[in-house]
Length: 264
Image 1 (spheres, one colour):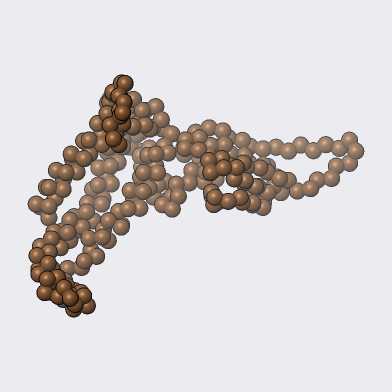
Image 2 (tube, helix red, strand yellow):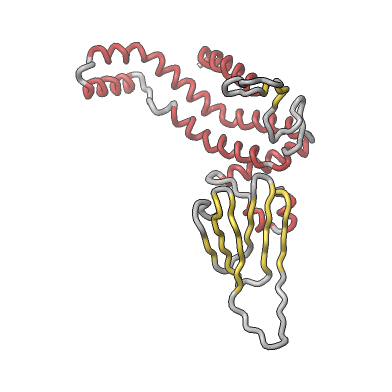
């Protein structure tokens, strides 16, 4: 998984692979004396090449080279059945191991319910339940900080000309009420790798391409309910497409925040 912004060379490679969002091409030489070269043509295009060591042939002599080639979808189970080592082409970035775990869990749930939309909902609920203690701790910390906000505002007025004294008094206030000002950020930081990993799984899962759920005809695309024709100029940000899920999510987050604030 070389740097995508520069050319790279590798000696004694096992195989090379090139991928896009859903599909990949893998080339594996049967000999071990090949080197691989990756040349960046443009930010969107790369050129891969294989180079063998120097071979000397006598007159009339010939040599045969064999390669194993795969060209198809990035489907983990399918690739593993052919060659488990090739699954390395499905690389999800920094949180790759979390992404692979979530991908296998999503496949397992799908084999139970046989619907990708339902599988995603169940996986989301499981992730929510696992991360709920962190979310609860974050909400409680925010509530505690809100409770102290009037006291902090008073201190700001008293020590507005003495920043050092102000910081000291605020920290003393935190110690008195046993509040860690960073405790609200830590749970969010612990959750972020899971969210990033889940996003990579959903955005690059070829199984979702063409899968339908309720009014959604393709889970790999926006859930547009309908398109407003001949709209010029289009609405700001949303354009001329009406997508239901972002609207429902916004409403849900609004009420969730209200309920969480009261219960925290």
